[in-house]
Amino acid sequence: MASTNDHEVPDPQVESRSSGPRRYSAEYKARILAEYETLDRQGKGALLRREGLYSSLITHWRQQRDKGVKAALAAPAGRPKADPRDKEIARLRAENARLENELGKARTVIDVQSKLSALLDQFATDSAAMKNGENT
Image (tube, rainbow, N blue to C red; front, side, top):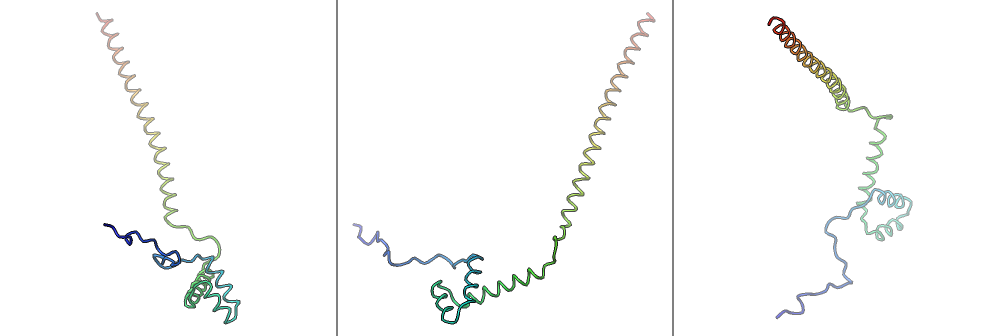
């Protein structure tokens, strides 16, 4: 006999816990940091409570932001240098095209030589037949 507790419905007032750590988008972090930095001490506390955040997250996000700014400022201006592999790929493609062109020419020469050889054999056969026909 099945008891009524086998298929209990969860209490709708209890929030389920997420399966892992919360993830925050870069836009969200930037927005929260911008707002946080304009507030006084009480406002900062209210923001943290409203968003369900810890002050250590704000510190970590600031470090991430500052590190990103430093990296962006340290990057050289202008176009990034070309990858040497791209240059090598372009060279190999050009060489491949050149070799395919040469191969096409070689195949044409071989085809012409083969037809010429067949034609010469035909003339030799016809010439021998004519000589044999004249001598008889």
